Length: 52
Image (cartoon, rainbow, N blue to C red; front, side, top):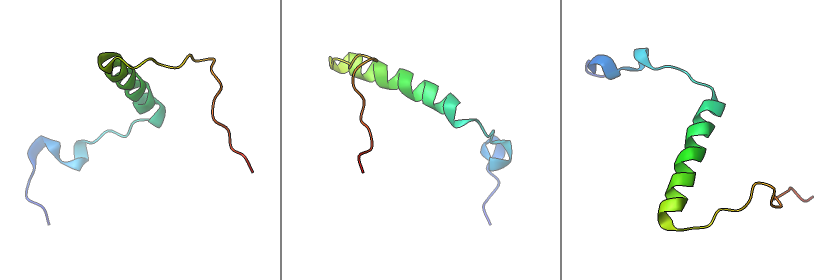
């Protein structure tokens, strides 16, 4: 169906846990906000919660 894509074919794709991706997403997000000069909320700040 698809032409040979060499080393980028899905057969070489590694399945990784979502938590590992979250770690990197958080680091990138922190860096982007710092570069934009946006203040980050404190970790102990009130979080959103589901209301029924």
